[in-house]
Image (tube, rainbow, N blue to C red; front, side, top):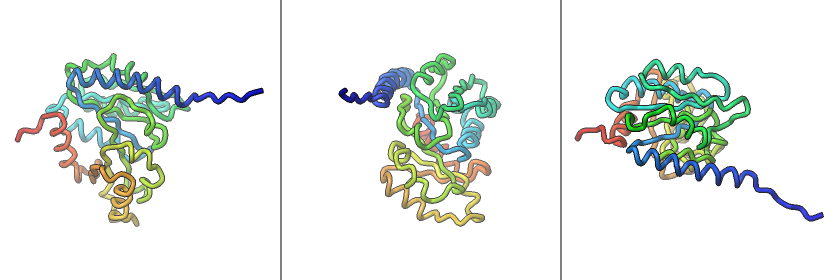
Length: 223
């Protein structure tokens, strides 16, 4: 009997990419900048978004879509800092990433004419989310000094697909055996085009360049 190969993954990604282009068109038509934040669990991306909402939400209308396997914890944390609805995508216990269909559904809760910046906080995982286009302008990969300098080498696809990287929790550097120059070198070896931000979301250290970047990308920065 002949053997037939069924390319399930390819078909799933092709279907996702078609939907992602529709989502991207919706963002572009509304003049909205959208970023897809990916990271492993515990990198501090929710705290980073909390800080960002505190600093900029009154200046730049921001919407956030969160993704988690089970709880609404992240959405509830972020909802404290904005009057806008925070759509929460519960991916299920086996859900390791968000997809474009879920973003399409989540956008039904957001009036894109009323926002200029959308953050998609992806499920905590550096493998699956790297492969799925969500219609974003760019992926931003977040990792922390508690995770080791070799994170970009262990998960190269995530860092190659990203346009920006945030190395978070730099306030902990005095207490860790973390080689910052080596981490930066590893980032550059995987993706020389990455723009890198060094932040401590908990303390606020290093956040001004991040805020300035967001102002520039959304046209909120006045020269």
